[in-house]
Length: 114
Image (cartoon, rainbow, N blue to C red; front, side, top):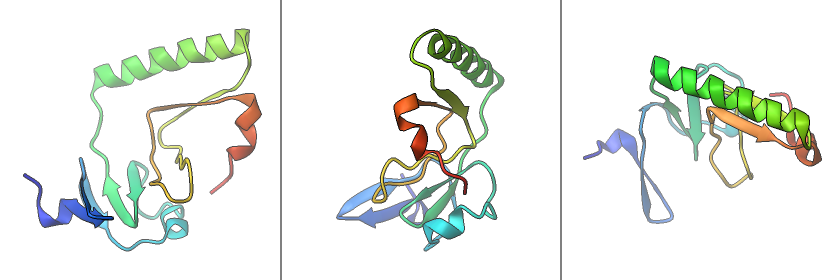
């Protein structure tokens, strides 16, 4: 069961966060300043602290990143990025920090500095 701090109503849908809410009503540009920490995500104005990962998780991420990078070098090119790079697929979506991101050459223009 979620606590009131973990649930946010967006268009009549309840969002249950996997981490602790560390700030609310934060503009996206303010979130990008980095003052809320490295391993956080921005979800419709709420900044969520993400839980630490296990050693096994870290090893699997490194393995997958290596495979993806080798594949991209041999085929279409592209970049492999890792957490804590912020990814926001569209302006109306949350900002996430996925463990691994693949940016293909035709989408290289989407990478912007904070």
